[in-house]
Image (cartoon, rainbow, N blue to C red; front, top):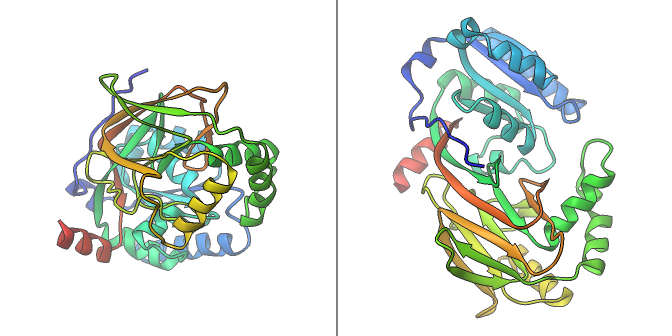
Length: 318
């Protein structure tokens, strides 16, 4: 299913700078303990800066509130107080508004990329300055993702983890699903096709990245650029548990891939098909529909509130 995306400009529209309402989406499983303290710090600092603040734990109540036309005229930005899933949820539901993030999840890959610390005071100052950038998002079939999508053994890990998840995810939560997946995964052949139906590559693991960040500080696609209008595609050609494990270790420690093991290319749209049945997929660390999986980029489809240092460094690179 094709989804029409509203496009936003690279710079935050001037009218947002005169607005004084900030709406926060809190992830209930991330907003306890230290996380709750940072949310309180964020609210306290925003109020000190003369902003009105509304905090929601319920997505439905936030959506109803933000859907009011009077509220929309006062809204400066939305804040995702949680992990990458909280950010993705806000962007999917409210792509027209600037999104800030207070990282309270396990990995917080978007915040790591933007160099945003787990600090409510810092995020409040970031919102006050309101430096923004336009980033690409992407769709896996008809579902939006922000960071990356993959088909293969890591997606099997995600499927197993979410099948037994009861609360907040910690890094130790991955140990059992990783062991089960490596012992039980069958490594079916995956075929990657371009939008015109041409075969681009075959292997046993495919990772499609929009932002050069992956869990456990693994750098699968350091060249990925969320402002390029293209997705970075990597196809691991080898099969088996040992070769896949060695590939993961080389990636974790920044070592070069063996020649011929990995094929890399960029594309604005691909389709991944599997020779096996019910081959698992994931995006942004959440389970995704099984293959076949059509993935396409949506250029400049979200506005992110960024630290001024990130804005300056990006401009210098450009």
